[in-house]
Image 1 (cartoon, rainbow, N blue to C red):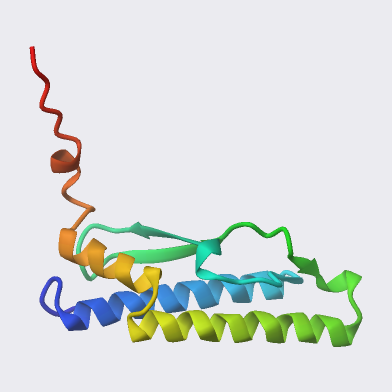
Image 2 (image 1 turned 45 degrees about the vertical axis):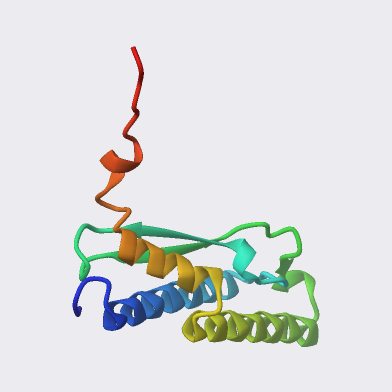
Length: 129
């Protein structure tokens, strides 16, 4: 890692996000399922680990109402469903690395605000007696 909150750290975090999304999609395809509609709105990221170099990103895909099972498709349609998922993944990754996506903005916010260790500040209640 580089300096906390620096450009190198942001790019490392974006790379971890990209790898996690790609791995999750690969697991779906290996399991015989295509999402059939992949977008930023359908990706949930979860970060674990304590220090900048030890954070791990896992991606979950939600809203799978358009998902298709390969076993129910012709080979041609299954290949087309995979191609569609990969095209959509390419658009998501392009947005991630260009800095034009909510995912990359969220990564930058997480790094700059360090939301992982500042829970006390976020939960500070100023009660009046």
